[in-house]
Image 1 (cartoon, rainbow, N blue to C red):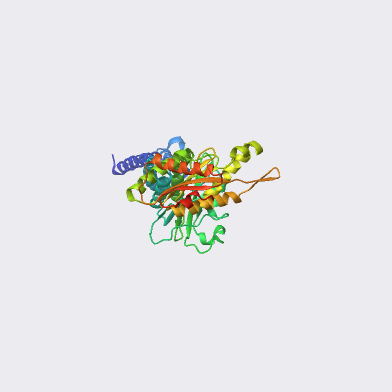
Image 2 (image 1 turned 135 degrees about the vertical axis):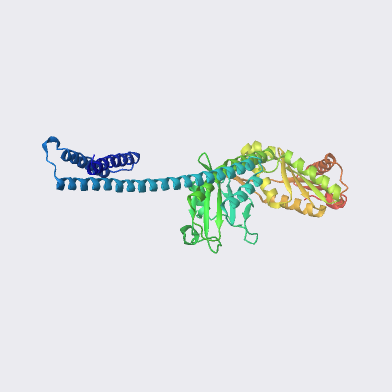
Length: 456
C-alpha cells in the first residue's frame, strides 16, 4: 500500500472516530442540546457520505478534488459547530447545576430556620400549657415574644368577654429596663382596637408615618407588629411587639410572630376561662360581691395574721331592713335591685384592701383589715348614709332601703377564734335589729357604752 493511500485510510478512520466521539458527546448532553447541534452533525454526515461517493466513484459521480475540498470544509465546519453547541450545552448545564446548588442551599437554610422555629414554638407551647395562672401565662408570652422577635417592648392585652374592653393586666416585657413601661389603655380607634375588631395582624415598619398613629401623641415607638390572639375566629387578646427603630418585617418575622400569637391564643383563652371560673366560684351572682366561701377564706387568713402580728381588725355584719316587705309589695325583681343597691354602697364606701361580701339572702359582711374600731365605725356610718340616700324608681314610686349593722373589733390582736369573732359581729347585728332597724351596734373593748347603745 502506498503512503498516500495509507494516509487516506488513516484520515477516513480518524474522521469516523471523530464523528463517533461527537455523536457520543451530543448524546450525553442531549437534554441541553439545541436543534442547531443536530443540524451541524447531519451536515457533517452528509459531507462525509458525499466524499466517500466521490472518492470511490460510486453512483457514477466522477471524483473532483475541488468538490472534495468543499465537502471536507463542510465536514470540518459541521464538527466545529457540534463542538461549539456542546460547549454551550455544558455552560447551560453548569448554570442549572449552580441554580440547583443555590436552591439546595436555600432549602437547607429554610429547613434549618423552620426547625429552629418549631423548636422555639415547642418550647413556648410547653411553657404556656404548664400553667393556668393568667398572669404567669401572659408573662411567658411577652418574654418569649421579646426573645424571638428581638424587640424592645412586648405587651399583651386581654379582651373581656362581657364588655369587649382590652386590659393589659400589668404585664409587659422590656429589652431595656430604662424604657418606659406602657401604661396607657388602648386608644378607641388605635391600632390595638382595630386589630381586635378586625382580627387581622398589622406589621408597620414606620409607625411615625402611619395613619393610626397621627393622634398618638409623643410615643417612642418606630415600628410595631400588632397580632390578634385568635381562637376559632374569636379574638381573645392582642399582642403588640414594639421596636424603637424602624424595622422592615420580612416573611420570616411575620411567620414566626403569627405562629407565636396562634400558639399563645389557646393558652390565654384557657387561663382566662380558668380565672373566670375561679372568680365565679367565689363571687355572688346577684351582686358581684364575694360569696360566703371567699369571705370566710379571707376572714380566716386575716384573723390569723392579726393574732400573729397583734394588728387591729374589724368586721361588719349588715342586714338589709324589711326586704321581705319590699318583695311582697313590689316583687322579687325590685328586691334584687335593692340588694344590688346595697352592694353598690358597700363597694363605693369601703377601701380596696377591704372585702365586702354577700353571705346569704339579705345578709352582708365587710372585712376591714388594719382597721381600728373608730375607723370601722365611721365606715359603717357612711354605708348607712349611702343606703339611706339610694333610691329605685319602679311603677312611678321611689323605693329606698335601710341597713342595720353590727360591728366587731379588736385593736390589740387578742382575737377570739374565727367562730367567736363571727359570733361577736352577729350579736352586735342582732342588737342593732332589735333596736328598731337602721341602727348600728358595736362590740369592742375600746368603744364606750354610749357609742355601743347609740342608734345610728
